[in-house]
Length: 256
Image (tube, rainbow, N blue to C red; front, side):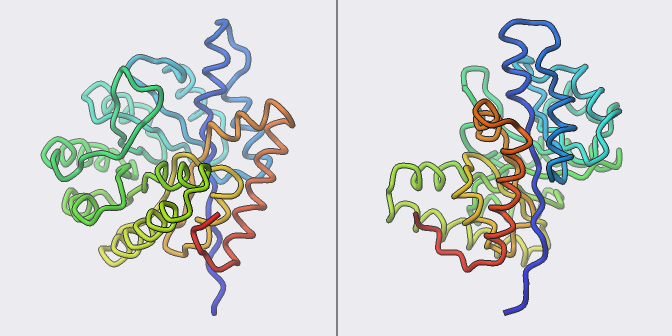
């Protein structure tokens, strides 16, 4: 079996900002965290600028764009405000995600099939600004087909349900979800889409999903920030990088 191409690691620095915002001020700085992550092996940095600015704020995005030496992926809702900000800052990429004020974190994928007109307009505007756009969706055929029709060149598959099943030891649930992710990734590649994945990863699940050759990038944040509390961000990113690289050379089963 031929070797798979390397898989990219995007490190999300949102929750560095969450810790900072708990006290105010500038410490800990998500830009410094991004620089540490890149030095430890991250291929890019992700930051989610929410409508309510609960963690990342506008100044963070501007400083990340100015200072980091790797691509910046801006997670954002498909609102006029966020599209305008993205077009001004011009990150390398923008990942459009669903957003609700009451949620603790992004709870599921976009309904791309039900929001085609809204998303087509946002994708078109971002693309014309030279920004590579992805849609954060479930690995469902209707959503993948909608993403392709909308004109987004990339999808990011929501992996939270699979990761939760692994954590709970739900073998049958994990197998079913993994099969759905694998089938969705294959369908997306056949449709000409680049495939990323994110939400809920730890070292074990990231290693397993990295074995799917159709997936070329993982975006991971909350878990790495939690691990950094105990052993440092550099060590957490390096361990994640090793896990993903090891998984890339292994046969995936999707089970615990």
